[in-house]
Image (cartoon, rainbow, N blue to C red; front, side):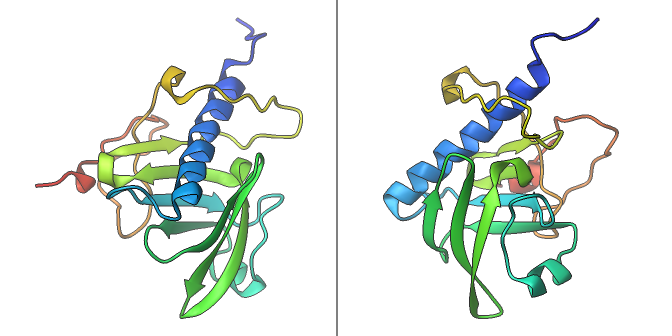
Amino acid sequence: MTDYIGYEALTQAAMRGVVRETLRQTAANGAAPGEHHFYITFRTKAPGVKMADHLIERFPDEMTIVIQHQFWDLEVHDSHFELILKFSGVPQHLSIPYAAMTRFVDPAVNFGLSFEKEMTKGEPEIIAPASEIPAEAVEPTTPAAKASGDDSGSTVVSIDAFRRK
């Protein structure tokens, strides 16, 4: 059956809206509230990503950044966010379109989103209130947070590695 409504694109856009609003709240506070912190994985060569060439060489496919204590100048825009992070002690400016994200995880509350496909310019950018979006828990594929699990195409994955003991 043909999906004339485009539920997949609508869902992906809504989930990116959750990340956008989370980052807006963080930027307004100047820090992530409470114990919240975020792992954001993105494609380093996706259209619109702006970062130093040496970082792209070091991370040619994907990169995971952590937004917790040491980040500066977080700016949240409708289509992307920008911030400064230190790499080997050197501040680096990053500009990351939401469409480049592949994962978002807040291990403080066992919350995660996985983005199935890259949004293209022809797809709608629809933002829904977070209360209307069903959250899917996923885990990042970073060494700091990696847990066992199969990658058989399922989008819901246990994140037991983040649970407080």
